[in-house]
Image 1 (cartoon, rainbow, N blue to C red):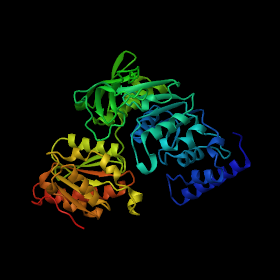
Image 2: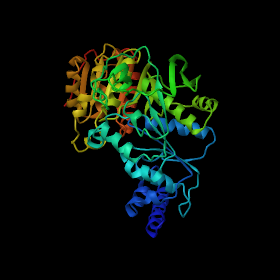
Image 3: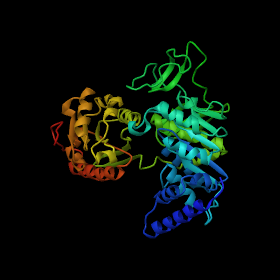
Image 4: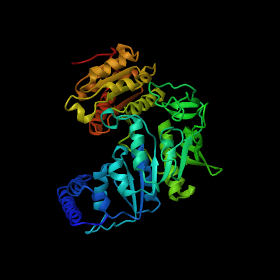
Length: 470
């Protein structure tokens, strides 16, 4: 699109807004981009595009993967613009482009790397037209916003440009079906010993063939609709992965990836399955971008999972673990619950699952609790569960429906009281599960939990089990 007077007015106003925000010490805000789009709705279409634009989208894992990709490229000497300090919607992308442009909007850098919200695709993809796009997966998400995964699939299908090269999850029958006419490669994980042939989750959104309606036959099911399947009545099947994890070595923090007939070990910051997928997708993306295996492996050795997503500390001889759970997202919470179940030792779990914005107005839809596998918390290795927040009674009911004994459950409305309900003598570690917008709350409670553990000395604690406060 041609630049108009309206575009330049919006650009200059946005740059002025950014200068004022900088003067008052506010960083990482998408306000300049918001003003630019308010003043010029097609601002992104008129803003000059960097020479190369790459994007990372999907329901779960896109922030972690984007951070990994950006860290590796930075370590390899690349200079680029990204929206890491802003938002992944159109206003955040616009803010990043504005901040990294000259007075008249010319890009200062030739490369742009953007984490892209899948629901915002209609407002971003037609304008940015990414050269390379990674989709991590497509799952159910917040019902109030993303409706259903087939809705998101349709949005991406319609707005991903035909010329965009794709990197897709071969083990996700939804993700792998995107834009079949586009150039694309796939990544996946070979069958692992723990994989079965029956889904163990409440939700499995792909059960029948999308082409003929016959019931799919599964070679293995990893979780939900992730696995390898084929239709017995037509040619539909999971695609073969170009980048495959053939084995993992948690004790060494390594995974073996096969690509182009050769196997190579790469670091993985965390051995949970979702983080193996995150690491693998980053390897596939960086390889398709043009980095050599040696460059990727050497830079990934320096990576760790963002502390806003997962963090372990120690207090009183016990572990305190912050673990993002993404409230209103049944798949992300189910993955977190299974990670906790599989973590060694005896665990206490503190749940802050209220949506940050909805909790303030008491309008949260709780139906997503019943698509979430709370049953993973019904485990002998989890003797304590504390639910805190405005919906603590709703969470308590769901825990009881999962068969968890009432004696293991404590719940309270005031988040700050959660730590006081712990019984440190019963556990080796405490997990704090929080929503994406409640990291501040989680960190405050983490300090309270650490104080409780230190005071207990790892020995003394309350003898009673569950309790609740109104």
